[in-house]
Image (cartoon, rainbow, N blue to C red; front, side, top):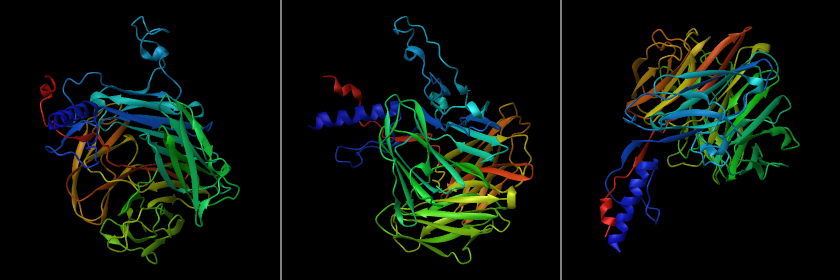
Length: 514
């Protein structure tokens, strides 16, 4: 019995090293015994980009990037990265002609933002009115940390503004606090299936009194390699200003992002919130935010009591009158925090109010800049930490620095001091990368607005590497001013999962041969 079991573990471990499997467990579900796991680079990454705003006056820019690093494999074969319109495939499955027997590569659509090597971004521009959703993969040395930024500038109409989103990894469950079915809001959930098989998806809405009855949110069919946008206001009869959208794939996997378009306050993409039983961090509130609204939800069976803190450049403070937040199980709570940052960049930290109070919670912020008719909206969801490395692409090397334009990177050390290295990559049109190390004090937000590639042209990426100390969270803000409107968008930087833990083989595979 032992002679059979041990080689089997060796076989599975070897397969894990080849495929990039993240973990190995014994049949009981407990971690398999054996030598400590090694961290190896992933060999394939898949991303989904939603269909941009279909405005006739919109322009969309895509920027793809994979950071350089120790995860690169020398002599890696078959490296490549690119995105295709959802629904596009190579004729004959990429195996040749119609019958796939002639051995020649089939013709097909050219990939969007094809990446050729790590460390150098690639940019493509498109007319938003005709741009489709995109799906695709990166392989070999381009897979670890591959990221794609989609940014759309809409200068007029409902949802005008700077709409940005980091293309996401497909999954099976997503939470979106801060969505709305109000009459002035036009929020769409974009469901994109990157696989050949169809996916079946359920949409659930939750308001301040609990579940919101929906009439058409169950069993939505998303055909293979296609995208389905759903207007949230069509799911229920009564408009609700602050709702939490829960997206669950019964079968298959999908990419999911909410496009929020407001008739007066501009628009942006709302990315899914991280879910936690401990603390949540919402990084990157601009210094000149004029209004901040927190929306939180408790998905589990327990109520949640949260301590609310704001991490400022000098330390963590408690917003006046908002020391704690009580969230009843299954209900949505919305709290207006006003101009909580008061002229300084900040990040919100939500932590259990009592020791051991680890109930499930999700959260997001709606942030406004500007005044009167010249207001603009962006969203900041709770995000995961930068455990090793994270990147955000799409910053403009030619934009001016500061809160009124260009790029601002927010770095947060919520509990313990930490050290990070930040690298501004070469530009898509040239330039040399520049790196700088930052010591982050506990409970603070550090805003970096002056790190750019030397002689950079085009678009560049920012990469954050945690070197030592406590947990680190990050967000990148893109902003520009158009006709007096302070347009902006915020993308959080969760860990890029460029490496996975793979147990070392405990026995030579030759023992399988009698």
